[in-house]
Length: 339
Ligand SMILES: C[S@@+](CC[C@H](N)C(=O)[O-])C[C@H]1O[C@@H](n2cnc3c(N)ncnc32)[C@H](O)[C@@H]1O
Image 1: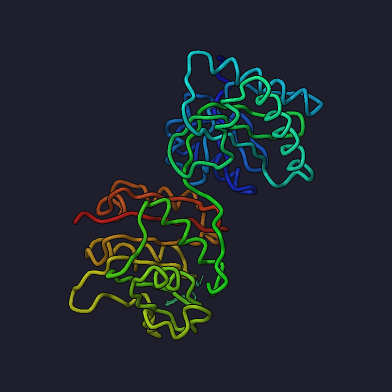
Image 2: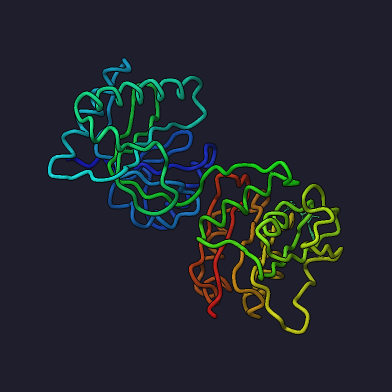
């Protein structure tokens, strides 16, 4: 099949930053719209580590049409042809989607998806039964991925790379929406705090991140002058210290299992006065640090983080910088330290 290139998805409103980030790694965008950027197929590999990319679709066909059935038929024809020589033995992801900015586009996508599934059921009943609308979480995936950039334009891929960002379920006892960011980060790292572990949460109030760790059985030292609330307030696993997080370090050189940091502060100050000493000192085994880029250039900040001499490059393993589904003008840095 012909390759139409790479469709990179991002959070809507941040496509200009994905375009700039691509430029900083030498990849050129060919077009962009709300929540998406296209590039040549050859640019896809370096984009896997792009902070602003949420998913990368290896687009083989752009199905265009005025009517729902027409688009569904084109997708089904492509899909059936692409299956030649391939055995489908288990569940496969069949994911249809679109950005949320175009009014009514969601209904259009649902109608095309339903029409496509009907056609597939008639043509390839066994394959249709194994289709799963569940989007894989992270890594390379094979199945069918269809993304609408307009009412009459669907980008169709058999392969996709999921960078990790994903909408998370809320918890009524969580005292803040920030809770969703740390929950989302666990899945990206592939680890979460647990019983027997100890977490240092800098800039903890009102306590969403601390609550998230405590509900998994970890003990938390929550550092913030502000009050804890909801499920973090009077939680027996959470010790609240009303202190300035910039001067905070582990007592007696003992390391924490996790450093959490979600401080509303200048991100460069957080890098210099928190992340660097914590990584250099080996004061934690894993870290999740959120940097607010509202007042700085995020692409320059990414450049600093990724530069050869940065504390992240020098001391961390498996570091990821991700603009999470639940991040706004901020991104989240995760990683671990060598044992
Ligand atoms: C976005 S909120 C953190 C939300 C928290 N992660 C949650 O899940 O509820 C930012 C917090 O950083 C705290 N903060 C800012 N500067 C700080 C400092 N120097 N020391 C301690 N906390 C600080 C603020 O008091 C505020 O509570």
